[in-house]
Length: 313
Image (tube, rainbow, N blue to C red):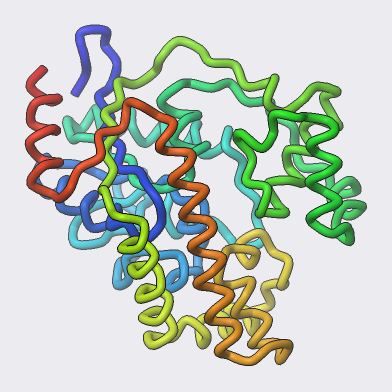
């Protein structure tokens, strides 16, 4: 499905964690013959399922030179495919996402990008060219022992605008921005270049009052604990994954990991997980509220009315 400019139409379901993106994406995929591309930086990892909000019960499928996570007969690309110790850059995500979009379009299906990692979404819909600086092991090792506050101070000195696009609560993201600035000699924010569009996006997000969203987050954390999140963390650790592996630094795995290691009581770990998730959701809201292209909807029916109009245009 392409526009008059020969650009593929891409539906994007975005917004904060626990807002209902996953199920909305699946419902719309069923209605519009869609295939989903994951844009959540945590759901890309294998083994990390319960705490990432990955739709549980899906299976990996390899078919016709394609590999995807199949859930309710809907293919999900860029989900549950990456080893937990492997880092994955925005550039890599955007390139693989474009390949998936091309394949979905050629099969005359609708590409539906679903996720809350704002930089992934922006790199795709605004065609940002981001510097391709390979990981520098010695630099990362040198940064490893430094507290987050010091890392943030270092980054802001090098790049005063970094707080606009870098999650300053995420040590891995801060170190990555420092790495790019250090090895290119130029601020990370100055190196993103917006180029000609490569897709025609239509963006939708589900609206929630802040207190309602916070309650949804708390209930999601409690539900995930009940269905075995802590046992999942123990299994992951027993499989040999390091506590400082990229996937293990995800919200919740980091806080509940402290309980698994015997550092804090379970109740404290759960509360820290709720608090950290809420802080992350607020940062996501700030990010997405800046984008005036997003249509904020109350429910699936409203989303469908908007998508109908977009597809007919």
